[in-house]
Amino acid sequence: MKTFLKILAIVVITIIVIALGLLAYVVVKNPFGVGDVIKSSLNSEKVTEEVKQANIEKNEVYDHPYLNEEQEQKLIDSGVDLDKIPTEITAEQEQCGIDKLGQDRINEIAGGSQPTSLEIIKLLPCAN
Image (cartoon, rainbow, N blue to C red; front, side, top):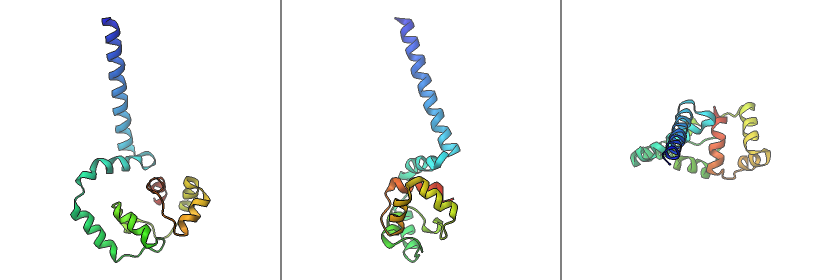
């Protein structure tokens, strides 16, 4: 029985170490922008209402050429600085978006449809 418990403890500890290692890798190396999502969820409590208000006030006067008002407001509410959203879309960025969401969905968003939060997360790597 003691042998079984030792083996079980080793397996559980190994799984925990591997999980922590994967988490550290994702946060440090940031593959596919996942690290940014994890960091923002960990730091979401640190964002104060003052910072959000400053972001809203700053972006109230800014009119992004590719976003309608609803899209801008959704990004502002999510804490995204509109100044960091590209104002020109390169062919590579457009192809990246098509690869991530498909041509039909990109056309809908370009026509004014609201992207979902998941779609925004998928498109973040394309903005670089």
